[in-house]
Structures are given as structure tokens and as C-alpha cells.
Length: 192
Length: 308
Image (cartoon, rainbow over all chains, first blue to last red; front, side, top):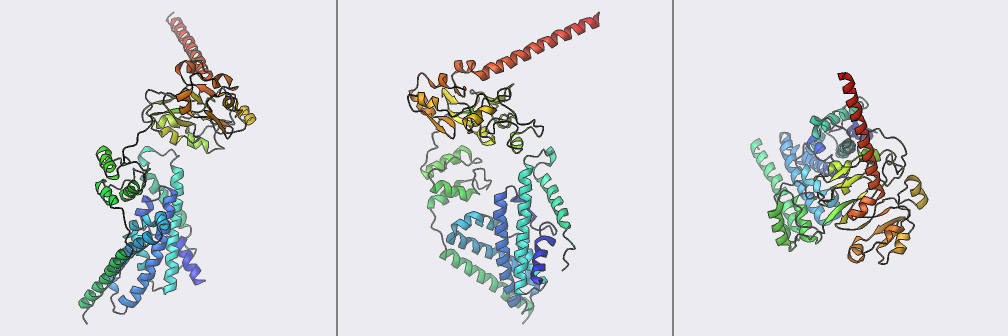
């Protein structure tokens, strides 16, 4: 039950894009078409999960024992960047089909704030290993949900009669604001 | 141990471990890349703009170096110099393209084709087609909102009085933009100079097609039977002409006279002026001219009475 609450909280209530406004760069950059956004969502979810597992291990076995928590951010940046690079190299060789599906988005998220934020928040909240895995899968899926919603809306928007000054990013920001308002409705559903 | 030393050790350790792992993985999982890919990639402007249709410069370099069907001139920012260099490196020549011109495969004007409903939304074909497949009775026909005409970069497409696009063959470059934006795929590219065309896109069975449009191809196959060169086939209840055979062999197109509905049309200037659609346009135009003349006369009268 505790895990379910954590998961739902990460997906909708504390959605990283729409309530915490992290990862906006890729959220606006890759939401122009649905297929790309699905690929991006998958890439972010998997990287987030795997890197927060790794980050958990590093945090609890290296940083915490030596009381070096103040280094967490620096070490995690290093860790995630190299891990993404590693993942890209391996996937490119071992699973070209997978690489073509979402591997091309991997390097875009090597230094993204939302991927860094999840392990950091997990470490700060002192989650157990399993809890941090659940929370990062939830956060990743929450990101995927937000970007897929956004991409489908923006695909519809192409046919709409948008006022000239708002075309493109302008209307996308307004749309994101409205989506965020809608997600605000989930707040208070679960309190952590 | 003091904190700074610990920091030094931990950071160096973490950095070293990741560096080593990355180096190892890079060696172990190295891809044997075609050397041409790197050469091509060096030439490309690396704007990563994606105008070539690939996910960045590297992807295009890979595609152009390994796939013989990918043309070397796709890099739009690089223009001709880059295209020439890429062509040289990959041993490709910029492909010889057959000159083509847009052909509108629909004659179902406002008068000849039945409408399902009156559409009053955004005057745009893609939007209209999402509402029950568009207002036209024939779900394959031109809806006449002019998305193609608006998208033509060369001002070669215009909507005529009866709601169909007309190609200005002198201006049409055959770029295919209109073909790609038309949600009904009514516009197709045909070789320049083709003299016979099936100007209908309906894949409905004969009676169904006829019910919604009097000038539809009903897939009867009479044209096919009468063609001495086997240039026509019937696919999905629609006659399809192989323009190359027509261009090469046919002098006297017997299919034109035999078509019971007039869906197959001659495309030479004389036959176009005699076609149903042209007559209709002329009729509409003359009617409009008459009306204008009447109005002018009325206005004149009004002016005169005012003077008096």
C-alpha cells in the first residue's frame, strides 16, 4: 500500500513536469509529435530508474558512510552523465532496434535536471532501495504521461487558428500552464 | 582523516571508476563504422537541424553512406557545395529526376458532385476531412478548401470557380508539396506531357461512385479493354494509367471516347478546352460576367437617376 501511494504520488500528484516544473527543456523540445514524445518518455523513464538505483548505491555506500552528503549533487551529475553515455554505447551495439526507438534521445537527457532531481530527492527523503526504485519509475512515467499528453495536444493544435504572436512556443507554454492547472486538481489526493 | 582529503579521494575514485568503465565499454562495444560515415559527417554543417528528415547530422551521414537509395543532396543548410562533396564521397550522383507536374485527380466540381452536409468550420482541407471524411459525398474527392493552393511555394495552383484546384503547368516545378498536404491524396505527380489521365480518385464500386458524382470512374474496365497497349489497369475499382506507355506508344487515345462517365480525360490543350469541367468553368465565368455587366448597368442607371 505504501508503495502504491508513493507510485501514484510520483505519477500524478507530484508530477515532475507539471507541478514541479522540472525538465521543461525536453518537455517543450520533443513534444511536437507523438512518436518522438513516446520515445522520449521511454528514454527518461528507463534512465531515471536505472540511474537512481545506481545513485542510491553510491549514496548509501560511499557518500553517507564518509559523511560527504554535501557532495551529492556533484557526484550525481558525474554519475548520471557517465551512466547515460554507458547505456548509449551498450544499447547501440547490443540492441540496435531499441536504439533507433529511443536511444537517440538518450544523450539529450544526459545532463537534464529532471533526471538529476529524482535521485537527489530520493536521497534527501531517505528512501529505501525499493522505495526509491518505485518513486523513480513513477516519476519517469509521470514525465512520459505529461509529454505524451502535451504532444497529442500540440498535434491537434496544428490545425487550430492560433493568433499570430502566439504561434509555436507561445501557445505551447499556455497549454502547459493549463495542463499544470489540471494536474493541480490531484494535489491533496495523497499527502506524503 | 580531514574532509578535503576525503573529498579528493572520493571524487577521484568515482571519476576514475566511471572513466575506466566508460573506456572499457567503448572498446568492448565499439561499432565498426564505415569510414565514409565519419568523412561525410565532417562535411555536414552539424546544425543538427533535421531538415534532411533524419535525427541529426550523424544519422543522415550514416544513412547516406550505407543506403544507396538515400540521395546526397538532402542537407538543406549545406546547399550545393555540401551536396557535391557528399555525392563525391559516397560515389553517388545527384539523381536524375524525371520532370513531373501536379495532376488533380478529381473533376467532381460543386455542381457534379453531391454533398453530404454543409461545412462551416475552418476553411482548410485537413480540418474538414476530420469531420466525417469531409462534406463531399465522395470520400475520395477534392473538398475544395484550397489547402494545396495555399501550400504551393511557386504559386502554381489556384482554386477555380467551381471549387477545384487548377495547375498552372508553366509554374509547377513538380516539387510534390501539394501531393503531401492533400488529406485525400487527390493530387498526384505525373510525367510532363502525359496526354491521358484518369481524373478521378474514387475507389468506390461503380454504383456507389456514380451515386455521389456523375463524372466518377466506376471501374467498368471499358478503357482497359479498348487500350491496344495495355497501359490501363483497374485497381480498387479505379482505372490507373501507366503514363510512360501512353507517352511512348499511343498516338490516338481510343480510351477517351469510350469512357462512359468522362472520368478519363485527354490532357492536351485542345482536349482540355472541350472537357466537361472546362465548359462548366466557362459557363460559370460567363454567368459571372453577365451578372457583373447587369450590376454595372444597374449602377449606371442608379447614378443617372440620382443626377436627374
